[in-house]
Length: 307
Figure (cartoon, rainbow, N blue to C red):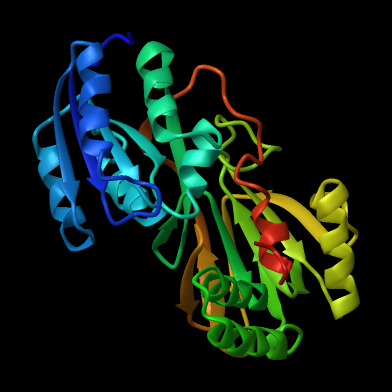
């Protein structure tokens, strides 16, 4: 068992996509096997933030959250870099942050792994106009495909078609201008910012975001990018302009649609992006999962047929 962890608080969202009614009992039994003092809270969505605050106020050595990415982001902010160790385990629909840290596996397996041999790592992130993201941010019209895919997942075919039409109508009508770091002004269809946790090119110790500008002038180029993503690394596509940055500016003629860790956000016509070196302290596996474990955010966002 890892040293320094004696008291554990667990918060579960029973309304999340992959948290069963047995989850509180399972979490308690796993922690009991390690002789840890623990409290498990099963909260409804409207009570999650209050439960998180109560858990942190109890001064645990480790806060375990089994919920979606939005709850994980809130928990990381509340923990802060000086708070308890934090373990965001997969309990939502997309599970981008848990998959980036622990790989695509059940939360029970990940919990046992980190209790056996976990190590502390800094969790870096980024902000877009003060809004935090911990995995990736997509700014631009391609972000409009996400609501269409979500409606399709929910079996709402008519709504999905309406949203797809909206996304396609704006796909090449509102290009972005952006400046990454101290570089010159660029333009493109979208800009993607990836945190070290999600980027296969960055280590957790690198103090920057990976930034990718996508210059797509036609549907044909979008298809080509999708094919490159399917057979190799989308970063090698000629339409992708890569760089590292700690800050960036993005602007357009109209409000900018965005995805922050899979959550749809509408920004104003000007947005500022900044790197946050440490949001919280994560209890991570000693053997990290392969980079890109989330499944390559850019490719899925740009491909209308992506699941």
